[in-house]
Image 1 (tube, rainbow, N blue to C red):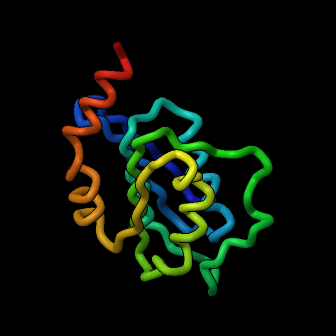
Image 2 (image 1 turned 60 degrees about the horizontal axis):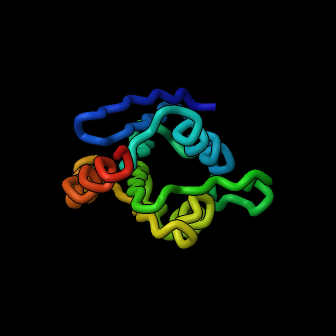
Length: 136
């Protein structure tokens, strides 16, 4: 299993999960679970740019999905950055695993951290308003 680190920036409303080292596609859900277990904001950046995908095929078998559902919160935005161009292979799994359709959340996959950050902060003001409304 790769090394996972997280950083919570309350001012930006952003949680960054950084994954380094070799990782197999079926281990990606464990990295997502790391986000769900800790304190989290409505915006999350899952940075796999310093990880290497060990599998020849980045497909995640359905049996890799845990029995316990992982539910995103309404309005969550999750950006995933991978070093390889595997968007078409992993994005459907990520959408399903994070239950995007059920919650009205947003998720996208990027090749660079810069592009992912731009996408996340594009609607940062809207997230801050939603978080302020939820805390009242």
